[in-house]
Amino acid sequence: MAGSSSCIAALGVMATFVLVFAIVSPAAVEAHSPAPAPAPVPTSDGTSIDQGIAYVLMLAALVLTYLIHPLDASSYNFF
Image 1 (cartoon, rainbow, N blue to C red):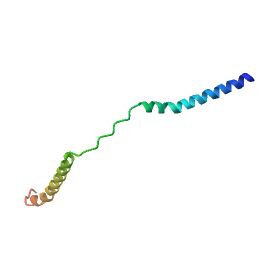
Image 2: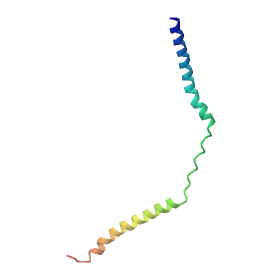
Image 3: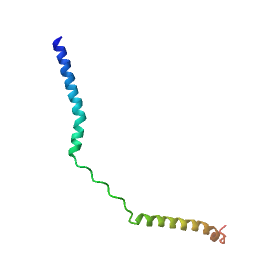
Image 4: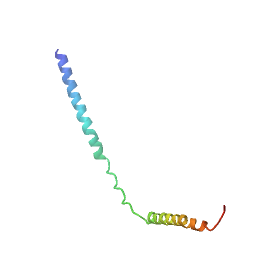
């Protein structure tokens, strides 16, 4: 009986040590690693603005083409 009691106590001490080590070791590893550099501030060089304006102008040209085309095509009698 006495051997069983000391075995359980030793197992409890070992489990406590493993639990404490598992909690403390990640914090110790993170303390030694350097902090990541901050991300650079996003900047707009105007390319995306120019591209947006170009898309709007192409859409306007497409709409005008489809609005004007039926007027132009009505003067032709193909059929």
